[in-house]
Amino acid sequence: MGLHYVNWNATCSGLEDQQIFLDAFSWLVDDPEIPKSEKTTSYFGGSIYLITASINSKSQATKSLQKLGKSNLEQLLEEMDHRLDEDNCIHLRLDLNRLLSGEIKLVNPSHGLTVKGKFKLEVYPGNDPHDVAVSIIENAIKESNF
Image 1: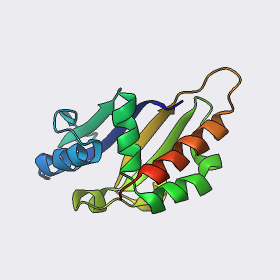
Image 2: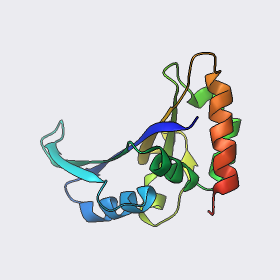
Image 3: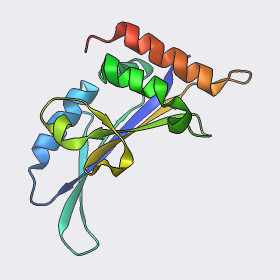
Image 4: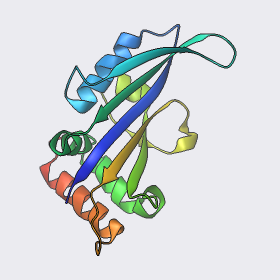
């Protein structure tokens, strides 16, 4: 059992340097080719960029989870009941400004500027999704170098 995929996304205003966002996402997923930027228009007409990074490789998704670091992963374990949805996905948010400076800090949705993360669990019939999530995160804690 493991992860099917991970998706990361954030919004960058047209006034900000999108390359800094792409570099931070590249570091988060450990691959400079994965992050993408799509220019669009905000509700009020200004330019914005949608920054995304999607990983469909189980091993790369696991490495991205490990990159959260032990303290953030332990916090995920404590909050698992609130973060796991009915589609077997773990949802989380990272402090955007800290990520842009090379630091990872798990925050709640009301925090302000965040990066949204979604990890899809590999769950088979007869498996309890909560137990699978706990097992994956405990393994990530053991393997994490952060």
